[in-house]
Image (cartoon, rainbow, N blue to C red; front, side, top):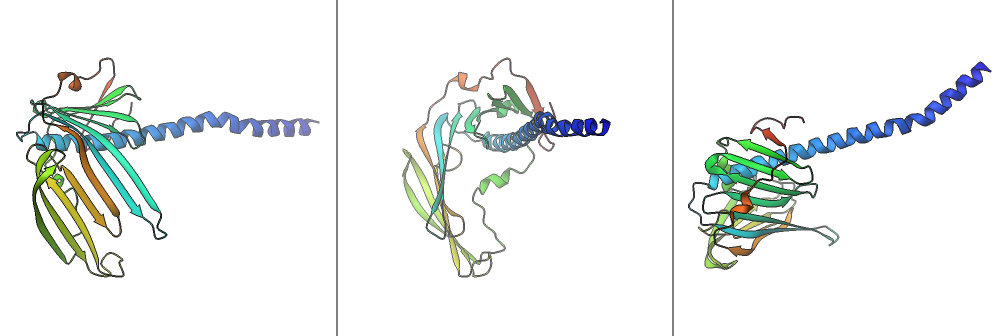
Length: 258
């Protein structure tokens, strides 16, 4: 009887054990998800602050616009994979900048920076907290000058052609198109391959007014601006909400644990 009772107890415990472990597993999964989100947000924040600090010395006016990026990749069977992302960008005449975007997990994010004060904030409404970074970014800002890099070790020739001046998004811009030639076999391609990068730039705002890249291997990517306004923006856009805890991050270290 004792043996039967012991066996019965073991069976009951085996049935209850998964139920007992499930909350622990869920907590561990959530912790890993939050950690990955922290790392992604910190990485994006460093990039945005680096970009803002880089352009802080330029004499841009105040502006606001929506930056829309669309990508299309065509599969061998003709099927297409499409993606569209939108970012709101603001700058006032004091040089402060704000970027409204979605995280990789689809959560709302608000990036605010004051390069003159050497500080930036990332507001996370879903987490009800704020990440802060202070100081001067490391000297790696020249990478931002080439947002459409090519593999110099693989291509055989590049040809850049001026497209002249024209109005893009309601503003005068200068355009160029660069063709990069890859001989057969340099990137796993059976035949010679050409990538095309078209960009339009103006002196009134940082970055590009319009950009389009076409690659036989990577598909097509376009970035254009909507609702571009060259005017000062309200101070309220740069306010940081009170009551949210602030966590400081560094340029070269992982985000500290809560």
